[in-house]
Image 1: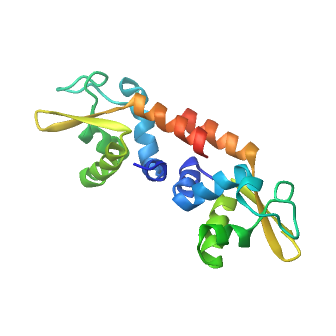
Image 2 (image 1 turned 135 degrees about the horizontal axis):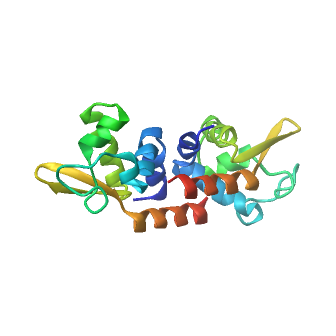
Image 3 (image 1 turned 180 degrees about the vertical axis):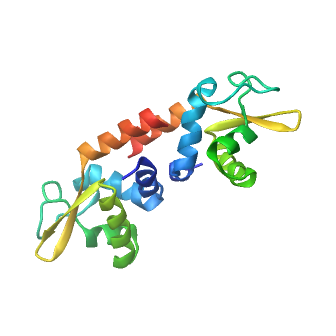
Length: 100
Length: 100
């Protein structure tokens, strides 16, 4: 994916907010029944709730971030849990620093 | 301007290309009659020509970059000459590194 597409994925207040929350999930989300917030990630439904948007709207934002490789989803019992891909995010920051 | 808006300004291949060319104007543009490429910046018309787009399309991209503070325009004899605002670009990179 070209860097311009990754920048598009980042260029949204809600998506930046989600990335910021996922830096420290336990500080921002209540414990989950299934899935450890840090190990497994945060359930998409909790993210939708905290953003105050509908499930489809949240899913779209999470899809954009996932396609850009910034977060990864993991399916547990029918739910998808999301965490940051720190290695990829570090690469993206380095590419921005180099190319801009 | 919030960082999400600056990211939108960056999230375009042509605008990234212009920023890259303006890092080293003498390597990418022919000498100008008016305005030193490095001291004064590169004439918008030369940028349009090199992008291979119409003047209005180029102007729109240059406007977006200018509004985001990434480049600065200087008017000389009716033409506008553009150069990077390196201090602002460094701030933006630092903000991205911190907030993403």
